[in-house]
Image (cartoon, rainbow, N blue to C red; front, side, top):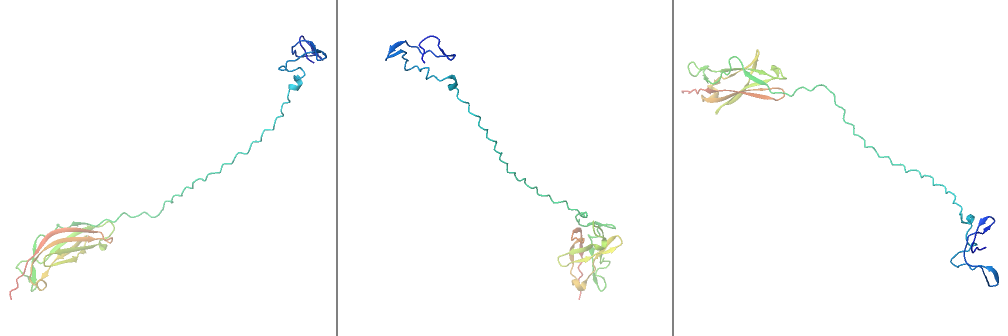
Length: 217
């Protein structure tokens, strides 16, 4: 059904007006030529036809399980060495300390040689006595080695000093003509003290002159 003009209903539904004029043509009374550009009412979709069914909701994808993070290895801490416990360590060994005793250095003089059991020169002195005090941080007096040293051009030697009460004592001389052949000398003197840990202290002393003893055949 086409409508040229005016309100037309069909089964209570208004029909769209397509325009045109009522004419007689092609042996059909009341035919209305419809412009080719205008769709006919028959071609117009009904409201029910134009409504496309709404798509059914597609199921939402189930959430994919989240990837489990690979646990990182915690660097292990190297255990520190436990403090060592033990007996307290003794203090480091110190060398002995030497000081003069009973009047100080007896050197700096002249001694004579022995000839036939007597001084070569009348009133000559045959020996010089040295006395020192020695203290050590670890050793007792008995553990110390204390020595008297003399060094000359012709003669040199050393002698261990003995313990005499609270001091160490030792003598230079006597020198016998039979050993020296009467030759004199000048000695550089010193005293050394060595402890059991090989720590040594040297105390210098005054030089001593050994008189020559001329032998008359």
